[in-house]
Length: 231
Image (cartoon, rainbow, N blue to C red; front, side):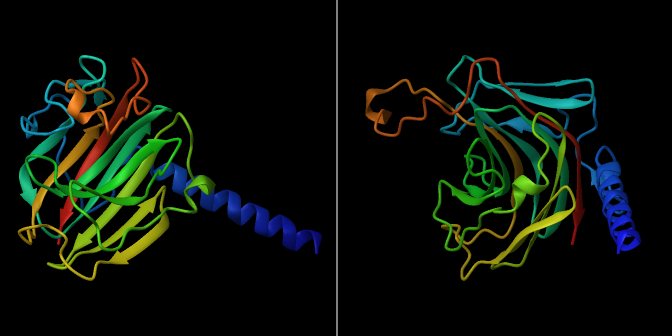
């Protein structure tokens, strides 16, 4: 019995080591869409209600998203649109920040979204500027999530009526087939987006939707090893 427990423990340790070893390396078959040097191939949305002046820059091979001025966020979008794909990236998310990974995004930020909010709905499937027919919750993410460290996301998006799957640090989180295409115009392709959520508004009319606690001063979302495999 003791020998069996030792073998099981060794196996689990080995699996954990293998999974962790993959973080920091783009999987085979994926093509980088971030060159690690600058934001060539990406642009800031100029029509997003999240803000249009976010402080987005590259440092030490990492895309960093911060608010600028404080309270105003934004969305960093790929220049290219993608339809069916698998997306791989690694994210380091500061606590008390709210952002997301947008897939099939429009220029203004209408998209299916993988939420990156801590604390909160980390890894959940939401809609940004649209209602998602069938969302999902990453209920097991706490078992694999490494706070204040790098975590890998792998997202598979396919079908005119989307089927979406998520893995975090190599572990499956959820799989959803939407009953309909939720985009107003039935879009079947769009941009990849990285969101820094706004936390303050300029107009009194928008005060009804208060996000004052969604981004702490000086905090950031960071991304690296962003790559895609078109299907």
